[in-house]
Image (cartoon, rainbow, N blue to C red):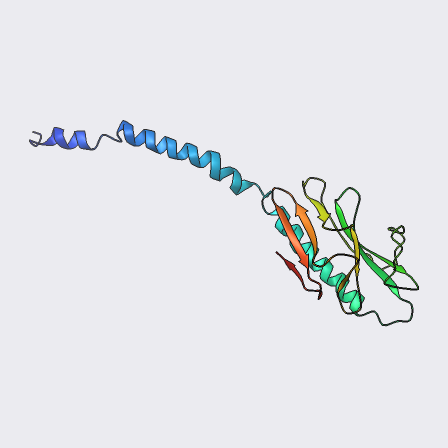
Length: 172
C-alpha cells in the first residue's frame, strides 16, 4: 500500500515550471550574445599591447639619444610610416643631431633601427599630434613637436601616449 500523501509528493518533484524554463533560456541567450564572444576575442586587448610596446620603444630611443657620447653624432628620429602601421626609429649619422634629414627614412645606422610594426591581421594604426617626425635631445626632451607630443593608437578605441616637454613618456 502507498502512503496517504504519495501523490502530493510526486507532484512536487516533477520538474521545473514553464516560467523557470523561459527565464533560464532568456538568461542563457543574453549571455551567449554578449559575454561569450568577448571571452574568445582578443580585439579589445590589441591597442593596449601596442601602447605598451610603443612606450617601451620610445623610452629606448630616448635613452639612446641621452647616451650619445661618441664624436660622430647620430640623428635619431621617431617617425610614423605613411600607411600608419609602423612607428620606427631612423638613426643616421649627421653633422648636427638636432637638424635631421627627414628624407632618409631607410638609410639607417646598422644596429640602431627599432620599430613597432602592426601585424597584418590587426586593425590598429598609429597617428601623431604634430608633423609625424620628432627626435630627442641629449637631455631626453622631445625636439620637433609642440609639447606635449601625443601619439595615438587607434583601434576599437583610441589610446594616447604623451611625451611631456621634460621628456616624461606615459600613457594618458
